[in-house]
Image (cartoon, rainbow, N blue to C red; front, side):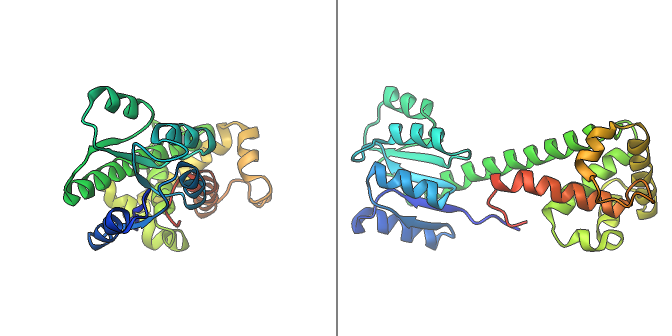
Length: 252
């Protein structure tokens, strides 16, 4: 699913803020305005969780630099800030960037420039999030005791990431996930299934029992012992979603 970019314009004047938001929307970016007031924006950012905030350096009650610092203190995931200003000053620009801005945009500017800046910084942010997801999945299966040198480790990691990113895949593991992983590694679905089963067996026999119990608890039938491939992938997928989705604007 493609992420919908949500942009807050820290200016609700008709001649600037409303015009800017309208023009961005015509370029495929969801944008809306809020009053040009630092205190108002502080509350709105915490409530709305925008991806990007476009705001002038000089705003009343709480300037842009102070606003960024307050947001960093109050929220776990702060938006990307684009600070606009009529001051073409390298010292001011450095202060703004050091305070947490992603971009310092000199007025007047072309709307195409703003669109490009917004899309580039959001794309970069998505790439970081994807990298974070891969790292979280890798760390999880490593903690469970799946050794990295076996094929099932790589197949399992790819299967879990795919299941997280495509919520309908987990409902039909043999028809969707196995073929996808097989295609990724130029092998067959049956080999993927066997390798993942072997990886789970190794983890169950050699892994840390306390860690395994903390993840699976009573969700796995004690008479059967180790979980099935489906049970393992589904539970780890759900566990990671709970850890990860609060940092994303995707709907898993």
